[in-house]
Length: 353
Image (cartoon, rainbow, N blue to C red; front, top):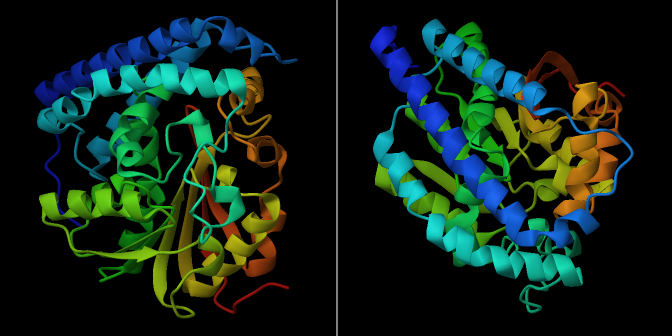
């Protein structure tokens, strides 16, 4: 891992300024999309739990960025101050806004199978428009917009939440000594998390796995642009095309809530299979009910507002019985605004059946 220079007050101010600007910019896009949807949103937002107040939301966002900066000061990763990268992403604003009416139309008509019907080689659960987004995860156009869409959905906080998933990886690497360690990112998508890991830990052997060839192509271009060496695999998490005990670390960022329950169980078995004894699995995904009780209304809102057919079952599921039989035991739990990070280690003796 790189030795990081402890940042001073100037870097802290720059960091705070950039994060505030991101929240304002992406939050405005989220609100504008909601306004454009109008009655469509109201019709899809029936719930029984109250929504958190704006004060509660801002307090949680402030805490998220405060912890992000503490991790910078600890030397776990450098401050997120890549203005050129932020400008490149922000330039997709017009493309994002021009796609919103198409998303609204699908919401109105409940068209969540509006994707290429020829993709018969893909699992049925995957051939749909998650979030009602154009082309689902199955086109270059979708891959090009995805990072902006996620930031808009989370009001500019997605990057900070994603970085928190790196914390248990950094501490695991420090504890286990210098690698090279092999890290497999399942559901790697456009490669945002994996490229961040490689930036901080250039010696890591990175493997990206995803079902979407267009998204992996986007991730591959990102890696080439950054001069990062990554192995790319097309395939499902429930049938990982790697040998037993072949990786040291597995990461999963916002994947499990998009899997049906039976596929989650298969994925847990596969992740345990490819992990070495003593290996680390980091799961970063949505909050679940009662993690932050005042946010339960948001969890109830999400699957209806944005097509997420498997989210409700995930939000209410107990994850320990899913992973414990595979010898994966939780060693770290962290709440980062709307994200819960759980780090599991694989028992040295294998499965705990």
